[in-house]
Length: 122
Length: 108
Figure 1 (tube, each protein chain N blue to C red):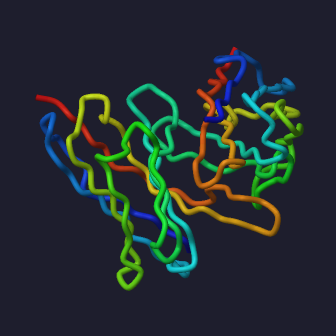
Figure 2: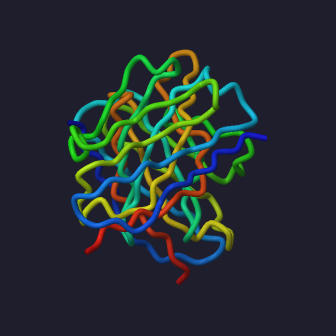
């Protein structure tokens, strides 16, 4: 059974840092691109970052570029999101999600974790 | 950047109704469009990918159509468990993805 379990959320002051983790199991983690998606309270979904299966390429939304860094450790079946210079507007539930690509189609998020809440407040 | 716009933002319907939700892209995205369902306090769930392909395990009352800039998600006969928020997502610019703002489906 595919499982994605996020951890590391919590309360942090504006300007602070936090590192989220996502532990993967039940599939060959090193074969899949992975993503972080967030959802502010009462709001919609916002894609945050992507990382390729081998970790060679990363992509970020403009809203987090230069502040957040996605990474992975395939030996530990783990995905990470280092969040620096946090702002009030970064308050959200953060989900990790697996990207599935099939022949002729770029990708969809077929498995998601349960999410971890990050609250940025003084 | 590709913008995704869903309509309506909210919708009231009854069990047994046929419901259609629309998603429009700011430019052609061919058929690179996915639909997700999200219930309160839960992670999103993939329903439809590539505009019209049903994800494994998803009931056949869900269907998707469209290509280019205009897409629809249809629920043929609403069930009590279908009341949720629905999001479209473009993957044309993958791995830079964009979601629509969501459509909340409520019980009338």
